Amino acid sequence: MIRVLGALLRRDISGLIGIGRGGVGGGGPVLPILFFLAVATIYPFAVGADARLLAQTGGGVIWVAALLAAILPLDRLVEPDLERGLFDQWALRGISEEWVIAIRILSHWLSFGPPLMLAALLASALLGLSAQTLGTVELGLLAGTPGLAALGVAVAALTAGLRGGAALAGLLVIPLGVPLLIFGAGSLSAGGESGLALTAAVSLVLLALSPFAGGAAVRAARD
Amino acid sequence: MQGPRIAARIAASGLACRRGDRLLFRGLSFTLEPGQALQVTGDNGIGKSSLLRLLAGLARPFSGAVTRQGAIGLVDERPALDPQLPLGRALGFWSRIDGRAPAGIEPLGLSALLDVPVRYLSTGQRKRAAMARLLGQDAAIWLLDEPLNGLDIHAAPLVEKMAARHCDKGGIVVVASHQRFALPGLTHLSVADFAA
Image (cartoon, rainbow over all chains, first blue to last red; front, side, top):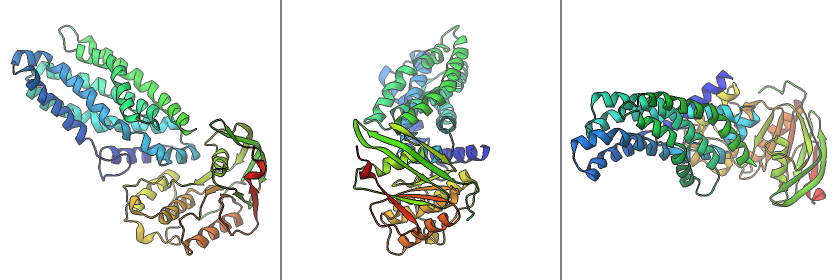
């Protein structure tokens, strides 16, 4: 089993992170990160260069941008493997869909979570965030992005095989990601430190449920 | 290539298959013992592939049951190989999953293609690659969906010979095809006889 999981993780990571350009999807984390930075860059243009206003609202913008960036790769998380018959071959070998989905959540997070946290450093400079706010944002992203990854993979599995699945997936993730956004961005306001713990709690719930929801969705899509 | 280690057996009893609201076939029964081979025949759309998916356990029958003993290996129109990877690495993924060295690369004429991305391979080459994946799996029961599709006159006998060798070693082969499949002792089952 360990051997199988290792092989799955290796394939997922090389596909999603783009080392050796193989496996799942392809394209790597560059696009979501550039997208994230682009949002952070145009925000000051939209609201004006008022440094106080930017510093006040910048943390929230980083969170919205993170949510949107997590949506970008959704359509290549599950559907290609379903279409190409890989899930069938795994099922024949007794590898449960839940394990495959759990591994995919891990590799999806690795492909956008840590890069996003790095990009947030840059974004915070653009938005003029204080060091303390930046620290809270980074901690919040660390707590929240695993939940976003779990949610993304589960929704990708649910919408795999549907016509217009990619757009639908984005539409589904946004409302379901609202708790993460509220607690994550809420932790930035004065006295909102407990938001970090709540973000982590929501993340854990999503991480616990998503492999089962995603696995059931893949099995349902097969019939 | 090793032989199946356990006595293989697959039996269908009273299988019925529904697709959408259409009943494709019903009352389909057969039993295959080690070394036996069966060709499922019938026109397009009659339910040959659906029957194979029922046998593989990938779909649930509308009624009836399938009992199987031994691992299932399935080759259908999708090779389940990553299109952007070179063939060698795409097959390498499955050999890591199956825990066995890749098999049949040389006889299937794939040695020269190992560096070629799967998406550049022709239909026949992909079919041969899927056969290599199947050989590496060491499954006792082979389910082959149109195994000769796209194969040239050199490759087709090769696949037939592999199926024959698998039967000799006590494996089971089920072929779904409207084409002639040369295999000693092959029995035939026409899905049309069970059409609902």
